Length: 143
Length: 143
DNA sequence: ATGGTTTATTAAAATCATTCTAAACTGTTT
DNA sequence: AAACAGTTTAGAATGATTTTAATAAACCAT
Image (tube, rainbow over all chains, first blue to last red; front, side, top):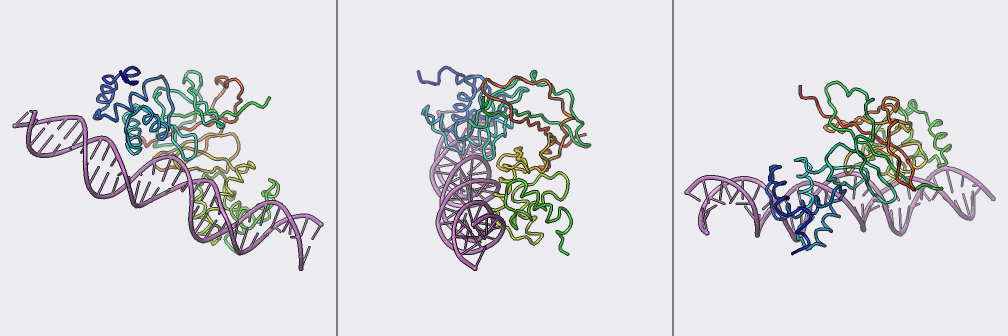
């Protein structure tokens, strides 16, 4: 019994990947299991690579990048940009927003229902809204 | 009469910079004149450097970066992150949001009044809201 | 199972934006 | 004008990400 038998088991990860039209390779399955084990996660490529290494999974950083981008393309992940020069990948692909604690770099989900976005401008002619990102930037309260 | 006599004249740029507590050096004044000439602009460091070069202003890229960050620090500019690996600097420091056209990389302002953000979750204990960024991502309408 | 084809993985090099360094310079103040 | 502090700069360094070209693994039809 390895440390990876539980979270999202291999079969589930494999199905999830295959259902998205990707080949369930050893490294994609392993990364999917890490990513989708817990609920909502926000990881950087480097962090996931490190985590994989710690679990004894041998994957190159290039493959981690490839996999993350493929997962984004097929809708398994979402890319969040809050920090210059570093992308976060979010396992929550439902409608939601983020708290971003600038000092720690920590991201936390806000359910879409908690933010009222009913009053919005019309998109420019010839374009349509693909998605709306709300980022609430936080700083430590000095009180 | 150089091409730079009009937009924001040298004196105005100098005052603006001095009022912010920075020394009005030749390069800071020149960059301020470019930045604050027209209304609302969204520039990258590289783009501004290129623009300066085109106007015959000799400034190093390092200085452009330094200046942009200093201007952000004193509130003359705002940094916007919408694209992985590239920061935009926004001359509009008032309350507003953005349309982001992913295909072209173009950013456009949305007045804060056009977005209702009255319904928001409480920030986590010990933190307070520093600012809220709303990015409406656009794609070309396929119709 | 096997062979052939396609698609993935990888280490290493390359790229890109950005930051740092240390020296030369400019603005300001005395 | 000298002295000091703050700036600019070229070039090197960094850090994240992407590319390359070769190797390996998954898939499909035997």
